[in-house]
Length: 422
Ligand SMILES: Cc1ncc(COP(=O)(O)O)c(C=O)c1O
Figure 1 (tube, rainbow, N blue to C red):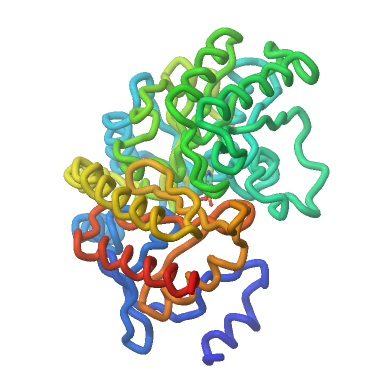
Figure 2: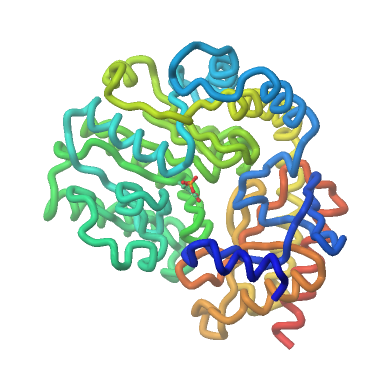
């Protein structure tokens, strides 16, 4: 163990464990540099956060400029960056989102979205979807079912939260259509046996489940939910904390699927790594949230907002290129899938691609990722996994990755897979 690793272990609560123990001292674009000078291709992207790569020039400049002027307001007075950042978000957000509430983290924005939905509807029930991830606070972990471990030991969780299946066609051995039908039938049973739809304030759903295994909802499923929501006066909260800001090929997956959220939850890539999150909704929806009914000290921090505004400007010229990179990555991954039986499924949208590693019987291969991740690390690359069994590679390069680095990352992982398969 290095001196820093020892100091870390002695002083940081053990609940915080980093995926890689190597000390990183600098990041630029798709690459980070370790203390020993070694460089790594960073396809972990701070968990789908550094969509513009590390330290994009214009975002650094905006943050530095703001740092030199004013870095905290805490709700005491007006400052310009909060307005510009919100204007930029409304400009790119799905139709109907015309106001923004800034928070600090994804979980905090999820909490605010649920409080808002309860205020708007006057109802208490929340329906969330099995495999979903919405954060770690008591409320957000109640809606989270990507891994039982996240909830273990924290019960009782919040009441009036109803979990229903989200289509996982590959794991269920079904086609997307069959999985959609099954999930919708279960929702129907939920409304028949457990709670009436008139008691539900909101559906809280990721349009592409992230932590749960990189399962896209599919156009048909998300539109079916929208129709059920409309029929029963239920609000649709789309949690786009991980899928937002170009990750799936458009600004938001709502736009990829052409589905309207009543409340949009944003985080992660909103400021490319400076702490910021947001809730978007119509002015009418926000009318139910009068001054004083919710609040924050750090939310909408001037430096984070200045970075976010510059980040959205910068992403504007990068997102049109995501489809081309995505097509290339999917084509290479599908080719790898055809050649290596351990790759059971390749799925996702844009540059949010899940590669599911399986045993001969198509069961999750729970050993595979640690071997492949270690091989990738030795070859100079960071990569993360997801799904309850940890057997899905998250392939989430920066959106402005060069074609050469994209191929380099896939080459490393293909070698790792070949080596693991023997
Ligand atoms: C979809 C989704 N929602 C919410 C969260 C929670 O965000 P945070 O970790 O910033 O609280 C995450 C984090 O991974 C996420 O992926």
